[in-house]
Length: 402
Figure (cartoon, rainbow, N blue to C red):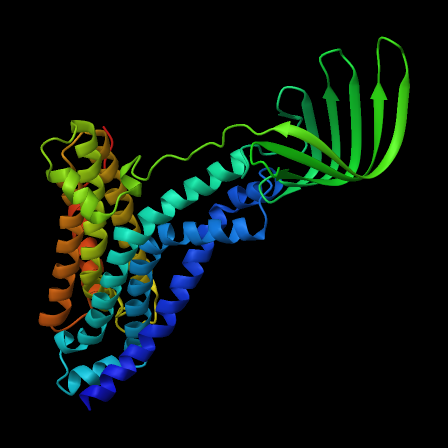
């Protein structure tokens, strides 16, 4: 009986949890679509670079989507049980709220391990890899990147412009190029497509053009020559390839063990220690908060009596989103050193945790009306009590005239 109940609740939670994870991650990725299109249009990135960018951005949003999915799973699953009177039947059979929390807490434990892996290891590595991807596209794989629609100098004497670019600016379409020697003689190239490749000696580079025309201009003699070609190589000097920095330039690229080491190392600079502590406490809060969300969800899931209102779902989501924004604000305060990192993070975590525990205790151990009804009644009494104190009765008017 108990195992059957657990499987039933687990199945009800799984669908909204998985759907929220997928939909929220996709919506958050849409925010960065402008950057992804820039990889294709301006930086010359191909499909592989775009997929790599999406893979690097996904862990940054999973850290928010995971708790959101857990909360939605609890809210929608237990709201369905409440609306269909199944929750009342379970409580009437002696199944307590504490027993009903077993499956949500199991989900929370599993997702906390996933969150620890994401924010502790996967996200820092993906942030660094994303920065490296942007660096490689900006500089090109061979040290030079051709920007779409821009004139790019390749060495001291060659200038190239391309209508389209792929593979980090190495495969070109619609090429226009000029080459000028020391005597002022100019050679103009136009080609259907071209490519930049490293020469066999690994010390120079070749711009190989295909299916184009070449025009030679000599300002001294005034002679001009034009010809067509199927393939033409322009030798170039290969610049020293740029090297990307090592990982760890900021706290977002450091793993949890690295942040802990920097936070406790007395030799760490003050500013770096503040940043490490802010990141450490923020990520720890992201993991710990998962165990409080089932308490909030199971309490807000019950609608008011004789109502199928979704107000509880809205309040639950709003509470978590407000907490998340305050947590990010606390991280920024600790990051800049304006406030100690631990109190800045605890200022949002502790009140939210107290809210989750308090509203759960109200639901589980005070029988009667759901928490939403009680909260509405308390607010109503507070409002009308305050109104009665602020608005004083008007004095009665006299009936006669002087």
